[in-house]
Length: 244
Image 1: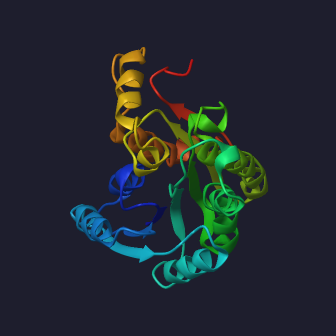
Image 2: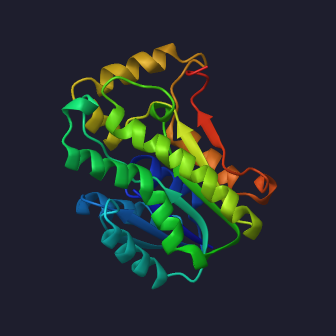
């Protein structure tokens, strides 16, 4: 079994990669910046008995996506699970962002899912599950969150089209929308208030606790099973009822 996780060396991506890994499995983790974190992530996932590879690539650029795909192809001949968890943003109102930064965010957080699936197309076979990690900001206009939420809304709709196109081949494409978690992207978007926001959202959760990385990883693991073969193009929210 082969598992490919972008943004897989920290946060949600790492939690999912660790859950999907195991003896006899090959896991490819993508990251963009933090070499030290990548080394630690590789060691962590290797404790499951999996063969682990880490690939540094900038998925906001087509050249970076294609370089990453070349590395994936050199290590696997097919993909069982593809998890697109790579994300980053810039804090502040959209009107205060530069055109260059906005375009960068749309490429990384929005259109990259379509480029990845296209470039990896022949490695996606009957039974492959593709997951895009989205957020509540894709459906709600959260103050100061436009640079991440708006591109993710685009990606969610791309997932619907991709699911429709790939369903005849037995390939599934879905979105998973976790509730508030302590992630790098969240700290980047709310540098002065991320912890305060997280505490308040945890206290407001009707389930009596906040969402954990394991909650999200467990859902992805379950959704990859054959029993969910008819779930296509959906957004599954995992937030304990916070956004009801």
